[in-house]
Length: 123
Image 1 (cartoon, rainbow, N blue to C red):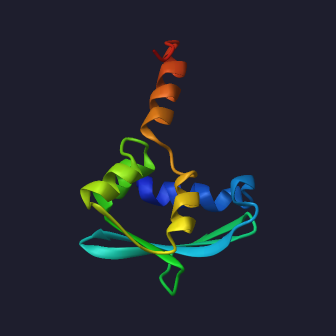
Image 2 (cartoon, one colour):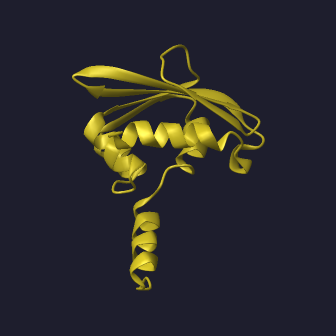
Image 3 (tube, rainbow, N blue to C red):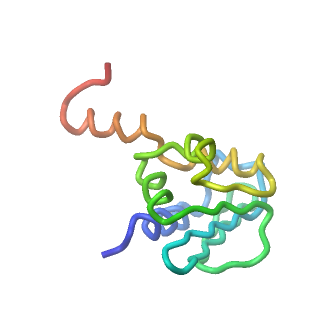
């Protein structure tokens, strides 16, 4: 069974091109700690997105405990709220991180999907 973090990065890599990032370029490294640290490197080149499971130099880095990132990747937690609480650490090019945040599911997105799938509308 694939964990939510791995699933998130695999799905992101399958997008290949994302119009939201059309005029952007840069690299983000995600350092996810769970006893050991797993690294994910996301490269954006004018909307083309590639993902690899390795470390390396990056324009921005994001560090988090695996449980925190799993909650963010599943839409149960807001990345902004995690930063404000200090459970998600960011360094480097904050503009790039702000753009990447658009690709993350948010709590409202998950709630809207759940309401739609159960036939309820959001209030």
